[in-house]
Length: 441
Image (tube, rainbow, N blue to C red; front, side, top):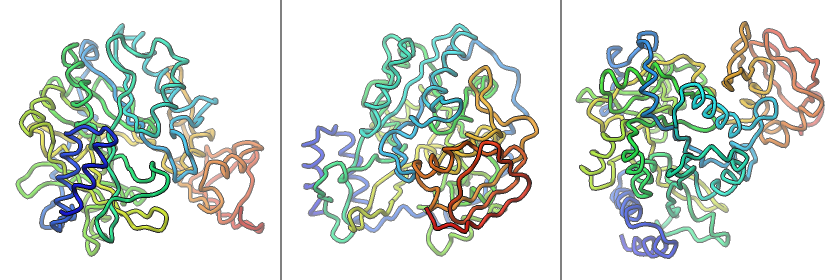
């Protein structure tokens, strides 16, 4: 507790609003008191099948509902794990179109098709806002009059693990971290954006990650939300071994739905957490939220939704630190009428590693006339496992593909140990395992 004043002073100096300082102080006190944010098996259950709506059961669409929808894209990530120092969404994905190009063109297409406003708003971090807004100037009609094109998520100071004091590096930016996408609720409220959307007659927001081009507006989902007056809906997919480390859908002891991230799982229960036969569904981070219900919850909780703490352990300049974070999906346990929707896997195409990007670059995917990225008919579900030392950052991947991107259309699995350069006319078929004879990249 003795160091909390140092954090408060540090945040006030940066001009951080009082509500965010209050939230950080709350999580700091939790941490000091020994609360780790862990959720053990006594606190979670596997959800009942009846709690998960089947996508195939969705009814016909009502186009009028789209007039009451706004899109929010989470765009705060730099993609540092891919060797990037700018917004990941600036990377080219297909036909030299970036994530931002594709998202913008999808939205413009929907506006023309349904004759609607359909606001597109990005939640940026202090790292990504300038680059993103500069890039989007090429779409002068993208912003809706009276609404911003972006808003900023807040930032928390990093906490030294050894003594719970603020981290103080020479480069000040290293002392701060975005507080996870759970900050969206606070940011929507504090920036006034939530009230602006309500005043304009918008009733729902569709929130998803900008690096997931499978997350497109689906009128059928929106129609079900209106029909059943659903406050909060989380799109989920069936977990596979590739997804076992991601957050999974669970049930509280009292029967409500909840989300548990791997950072919230006790170490001795990790195997159970990753058991895809017990916890069958993972969170795609595609969320549909009723704005009036969100407003009421914020009023009820004095502006701060009680999201569980995620204590993220990092290291900065060889100093172990804590990052206090929250996940926006964990709000599923707060809303009165929340649902999970089991959606097709094609709504989840995230790019977290360079090998994910290679898959989208390949001939297994195409960008259709509506600017929707989709698998080509007949293409295989390809599992990639590329040597991270050789393909882990974007410069390495670009070097590997400087002579062209190989065909992965009929490739079931590709594993490469070491570094090889691809060729445009190279075709991988079935299961391919390569051990390079050259030195690593």
